[in-house]
Length: 163
Ligand SMILES: [Zn+2]
Image (cartoon, rainbow, N blue to C red; front, side, top):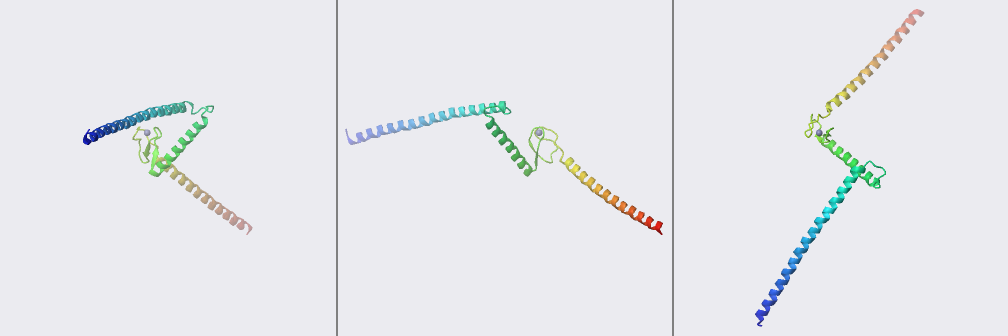
């Protein structure tokens, strides 16, 4: 066999070998992707079991997972609190019906249409309370002055009687 033919042979068999190896790599990646897909299915199923268990037993203190459930409830409460802090910073209030964060000045929830609690009412109540307090303080002052006047009048009268 001529040298050229030999080289051609080597080249052909080598590229065949390389082609097979490349095919194997591609097949392996495909199979690994399939495994990941199946593993994700298992992961999602476990998640669903956990969520369904939580919904069914979240108020059961005798559940063998009561501690984990308490942890979830604590985390949920903390998330609620943190969301409220964010809402405060953004000037948002929660819709009392659907829980949507709504601009504080909005009269009706844009999501569910519920009437939003009037912020103005709260402010008016506070203003009225302040006015009542001031009026009460004035009355106290007037009563004190009147008492002082009565006292003086009584003293004057007593003085006149003596004279
Ligand atoms: Zn709403």
